[in-house]
Length: 254
Ligand SMILES: Nc1ncnc2c1ncn2[C@@H]1O[C@H](COP(=O)(O)OP(=O)(O)OP(=O)(O)O)[C@@H](O)[C@H]1O
Ligand SMILES: [Mg+2]
Image (cartoon, rainbow, N blue to C red):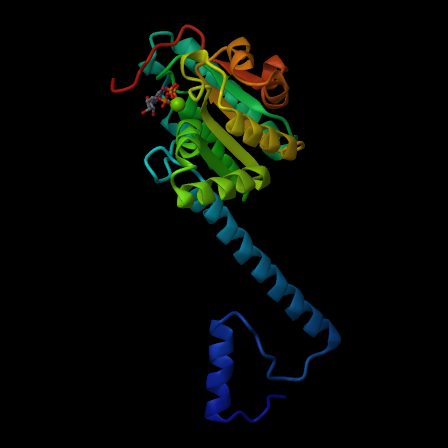
């Protein structure tokens, strides 16, 4: 039985609905009411999830060019490498890891190791694409840009503020990509102490989450730049979780 609705009331209900609030205009059973409330909560949850997913990827991430990059598994062309088999192998391994992490809900870190231009960031982005499709909060951090923020934090208050927020989000993201890790230790020096402290906080807070690292350095070199405690928490020891780009060439701008 519908209530007699005045035009003004009808307009109010329509407006409420536009804002995602549904107002019952008929007598409901308890079950109907529960169902309606549950659907409303689910809708709210999905809207929140979509918003946060976008925020992590577009706002909280630190991109080299300030905007998100995209690379998907279908973009990977093994034939641009002379060693086609090697290029196929790393993509296959990355895809297997991605499926295991998503479908079997496993939690471990992954590292991509190789010389410049072999496709490490590309495959990390392809993983990110799959995680985002699975509605995960994925954050991308260019370690080079992060180092730049540390270098400017004293003079520029706004950068220091952004840096503090970034460290916080890095602790919270469900999946974190740390791109070009190791470039901050220019000349293989020790990384500046405040950055090491920040990284230490991050890796400790990320226990049980997924962190994906790309690097041009061998693990031993990373241990020379950072406190080994940080590296042992960040870089997986399991060889299955290390994607090593062996006998592959720089294909940037080919
Ligand atoms: N197998 C591939 N198929 C298609 N494009 C590729 C492939 N390998 C690399 N590329 C392209 O080559 C360029 C360099 O790749 P990418 O940035 O992933 O290299 P990288 O290993 O991360 O290098 P760096 O160590 O300098 O960061 C990118 O534009 C990438 O899309
Ligand atoms: Mg890269």
